[in-house]
Structure formats: C-alpha cells, structure tokens
Length: 118
Image (cartoon, rainbow, N blue to C red):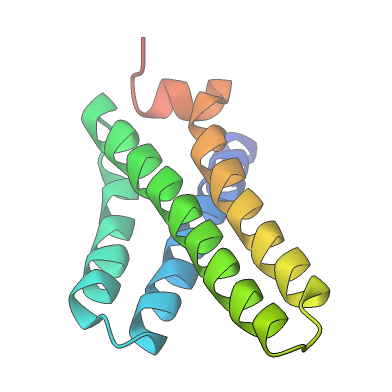
C-alpha cells in the first residue's frame, strides 16, 4: 500500500508543480485572478472524479498554449531588437512541453484509476 501511495504522489507531483509554475507566470505578468485560479486548481488533484481530471488536463493544455504564446512574443521582441533568443525559446518551449507532459500524466493507469476515468 505505501508503494502505491508513493507512485500516486509522484504522478500527481508534476501536474501540481506545473500549475504552480503557471500561477507564478500569471502573477509575474500582473494577472492575479489567473494566478489565483491556477493555485486553486491544484485542489482538484484531491478530487477523485473524472470531471476533475479533465478540468486539470484542459487547464494544463491551455497553460501550454500560454507558454507558447509567451515564447512567440518574447522571441519576436528579442529578434526585432537584434538580441539572442534561442536560449529563451528553448527554455519556454521546455516549459510548454512540461505542461503537456503534466496533462498527459492523467492517461497513466494509476491516475486513471484514482480519478475513475473510463
């Protein structure tokens, strides 16, 4: 039983951290309501229902789109100013991929069982 709980914790850790990272991004951008919403969504990790998992997946996918939007905006601005932008693009691209990976975690057998998904 403890091993199963540890595995479940590890599988939920990535979505939790991804939502906190998204909240920090929104807070830094001055979008406090979206930052609060991102933090509040972490509470859904404790709700073992399919709708909670799907809501979290949707939020994480939308978060990935937000990171890509940010990447395009910042990289375009830096390129227009003649500044290097490759490292910025790689980092923000990796963060967007992390968001998608966190959303995909809900397809894992352990999380599908926890959230009672089909």
